[in-house]
Length: 492
Ligand code: NAP
Ligand code: MG
Image (cartoon, rainbow, N blue to C red; front, side, top):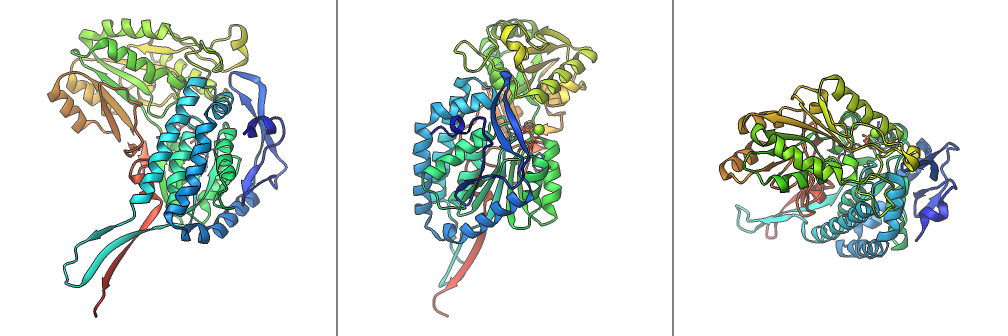
């Protein structure tokens, strides 16, 4: 498998109706390696409305046969794709690193996590079809079944461009839907590598389609189409909110996984070494470009200095560089727009009076000058109303907020528009339970990083971080199905 190498520097294609086909639009764009912007990793179509229509037609045509298969037969196809995924981890990791910039180790972890998601969603799909409930009447069998929706669309982000399509497309396909994937423009090769697995596994034509192009054209056309019955989206709150508005005109259901401003609360009895270690990982792995990355540390004043000392020591060890190098602990950020946004966020922090204790700028020495490298950055003296305490910067930037006590920590943690993930470091059981009850998020953690997740549980935020039935876990398949309730009297 070397779709990426084979197609490198040639206009890549869409995958529609079981074939790689050129876009009907002539316009293309270059995807560049964020570690070296002079290196073009691929030329991709900016597809248009006719391409989207063709993909929808193909998916509609394939729907009848695919949904009529037994779920076990559908699982057979997906298991073949899964075994190819396992074989191709190193190759797909190269694609991911070249497009996104994350280190090869982070890319391999993303793919291995995707394998676990896929294993869970395949087995969940086999066993989660409806329920039987005792009827109140004699002789009546009362039960429900789940039905697929039809054609569904997945709109993916660039930060987990392989894992997110897996997490969304697999439950959709297991349930009997047919699917169209729109990758982020920054990471089309990772999406194409995912789709190629299914081509090679012999998935029937039209069941999974792939259309490369912009969100405003391809994404919007999918969201607007009455033929598309569900939209599963991961990305920014602003785009997700717009998608929700457009989709609601057709009552199309949406699953929106969006931004975060995730807090790690550190109480004065915490194991500070463990907390500093976890904070370093949660804030700077993947250059802070995780939706569940820790971007706020809320720490009780008596341990502020000790904690900061340990944190800075940890962060100093991070070597920033090309993700392909073994020594690299943190790669570039994903492209020029990200670079600019993150640097703007850092400038805002400075102008609001927060103090930088480490990092704070772009790295341009030697080979780094050609890429999008930012120092891991920590601000102290941050107050809860500052931009860097309220808004997602989505990069390697951590805001440290000092508080008087647990009550204030909780208050600060909750006082943002986002509600994705949180964590607390303490051994105080009473406060732990209070925090679990009162933290306004979709997932929370105790003595663990905000970024931790497992595939068998749902994943999604509240407030402006998420809307709709959450993805992954047992709700993964729920989103992509309708319920039909049956009352059956055998003897009238
Ligand atoms: P984004 O700009 O919202 O884009 C996400 C996807 O939506 C891309 O494929 C994009 O296409 C597409 N899109 C853009 N405008 C659209 C429109 N009008 N209609 C339909 N689709 C449209 O987000 P991003 O910059 O890729 O990702 C960063 C954000 O994702 C962060 O806020 C992060 O927190 C969030 N995120 C959340 C989760 C979660 O599960 N909660 C996970 C990962 C990331 P283009 O490529 O053309 O822009
Ligand atoms: Mg964007």
